[in-house]
Length: 292
Image (tube, rainbow, N blue to C red; front, side, top):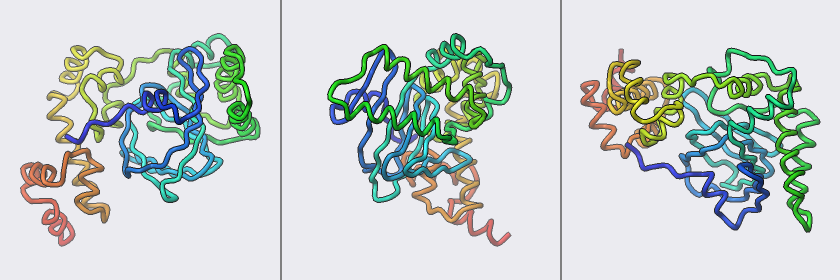
């Protein structure tokens, strides 16, 4: 319904402007780039940590908003995200990309005390980090690598990636992220409903939704119909309109902002679909709701 979002991981990895330290499927990046478009929807195929060095940004999920500035850190799950600029678009951060398979293997082989937990699947698409002295020292130590005349060995780099996971799992400061890592370790089947509820407002192809749900496209379509008793396309349209109705009733956002937030291509498309669903165009619906 909206324009197709871009692949952030490949953009970062393939951009010579950014400094990279890479080993296997793991990537450290010193990301220094203004946010020229706001809001910006993007897709990332790997989880990543973001440690803000300068500037700041605001991420928005279906149910929450998070603002991060210098010295803040956040873990973003693979999938789709929506970010807004703050501080005139100035943004510099350390990004640390790693796939689920690496996280699971480190916990299995290095963290003996890991225990299976049950609540990780209910967490949001991003998880703010509480930075103790150990984590702050870790991020600053990695940043120092970029100022050295020669890059560290691949063996040392891999140890640094492992260190971050072990640090999280052996500390009590970030329990939500520990739960998510445990979900990764024990290969719990991702709940289709949970994935769809967290990503419905992004213009992802059905193949991308299927990958997020851990299914082939055929299995995704079959399981979706079994779960929702309708097709993915019809469900996405209805869900986005319902969210638009909620925003009209509970916020002062204008039509352009709501159109963007719910994932429609343009305001006229949203207005037409909304009228078909609810009998009135959005602004008239809002006035009637305010009177009642």
